[in-house]
Length: 111
Image: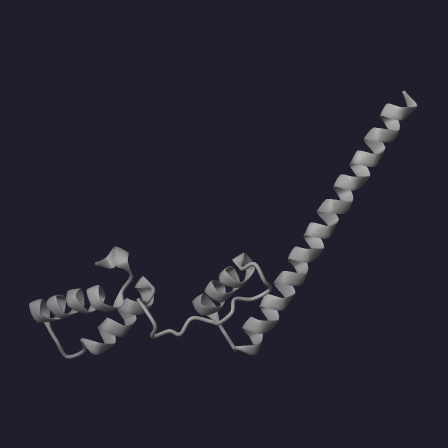
């Protein structure tokens, strides 16, 4: 009986030590990513995206932050850019311009 009790206590201690280590590693990663986002002066959606990618990465931070112009924009950003570029157009002309612009600048799900 004493052996079973000792085994259960040892297993409980090992599990608690492992979870505490994992929590500390995640906290350290969060602190590192948060500091980098602050250093880069990221705000709003850009900060959320950076933090998500940073925390998912194997290391503390991604190798390089993606350049905003490299590749398709997020749907919200593509809409803003296209709406600003289409100022002055009206009606069907604006709708056609907006459609073509979003296909060119937006992600694959907008094409």
